[in-house]
Length: 115
View 1 (cartoon, helix red, strand yellow):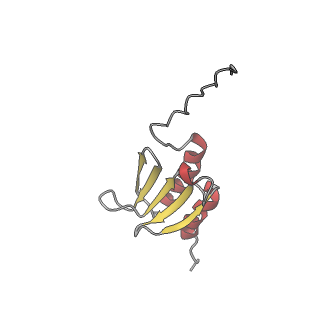
View 2 (view 1 turned 45 degrees about the vertical axis):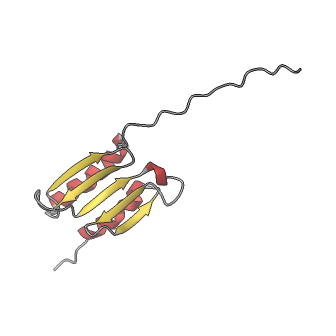
View 3 (view 1 turned 180 degrees about the horizontal axis):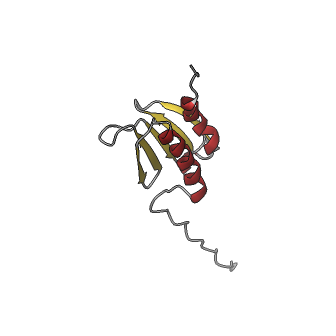
């Protein structure tokens, strides 16, 4: 009969109660939001922190559907990238691993021809 030492038990990693934007991510998003408000494109925003994703929604007026949603889904970190910009119709406009790169799709809306 062979005696073996007990197997080390490692407790599972705690599941976060909610996903949130960190300070750096929020800084990048709010800088874009400020420029779009100054240009008169956006007027209001809302943030939602859920169990599997964090959402920053942008509105033209407070009483309508969001124009765009900036989503952070850590579950997609290893695949397509955890950041995405979703349009009003639910279509994903851009997805990637780097938030400033993903937000460039919205900055193009600021560029207008000078008359």
